[in-house]
Image (cartoon, rainbow, N blue to C red; front, side, top):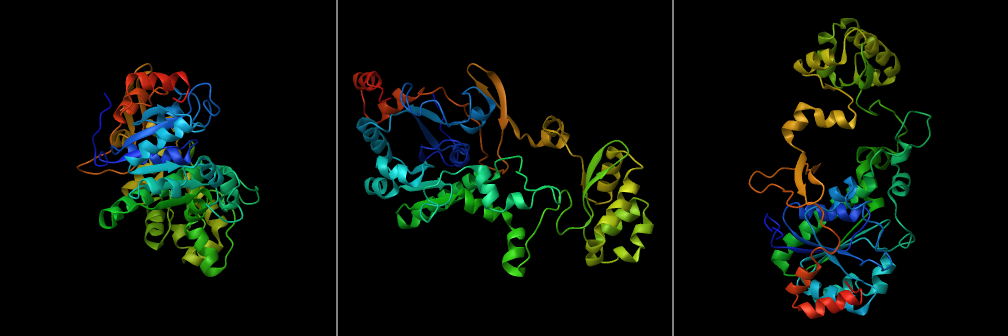
Length: 396
């Protein structure tokens, strides 16, 4: 029995998404209890084996598609579209990340589905927007990272453009879309009407530039690569210690003073070349060398302890396994357990926001393909014989 509970359990979401941005959006809703019906193509139908995050029992798929029910449906068949439209009549939200022309061709665009259900909130994620000169281009995270400016400010000075190590455009487009859907559901409580929520990889990537984008828009500065040095907060960066590397953020007069005093580096504090923020910026390379000489005298663990005790931000540079071994990470419990029927107990990445009364929950691992097809069609009024006939014709 698929458990339905949580603050969003009254909402039914039809998930037409694939790859990463769309599933990221839907995961936000599923983790707080929305009844999510994931639509996948049946076996033997074009598109049945791609675009969902690798092997079904692999880490990526399990992390993306937990807390959903699975319905197989051939959206290229009239019967499949008819079933989808019956679902939409009872749904609160549809989320899709088809190219704009594809959903129009299938007859499942916002105009078509909102005509069936005017209360429908329809979430769309695209590469570059639903219209405009690039609307029909296929979207991909690294393309958005490059077009959106992120690769030009990532990496060491002079290194050339560098991709960020996570699909940040995909992930943030999904998060922005989820936020828009929740806003639309709140607004619907007043208006009684649904609406079309749109986000794109390109817009999300530009929004995530934040102060780097503002430096151009307001001051007409074009930021460049700063490597591990923070572009505006100085001194901030990666420094070598006696036994490894660490991050230090000693920016601002008060923290810079505390750092120098705690580290026994009064000579740095008293140096007129470093007496103000503009001078510390101008003389960054020399300042970093002097700080490096001081930090090389003690171990990373020693520095992290004494500096944090003094109120100076400092921390290790962890590999992924070290992240989850960290005592604070374990205390936060973001590695969240869930039971998989064949994999057994596994852990997935939990949510990064907490609600005191209605927390997110991992209720189920990702389902097997079509595991819930019969139950969902039964809820729509299909009997056993009709379901068997649909399966025979590979509609489901």
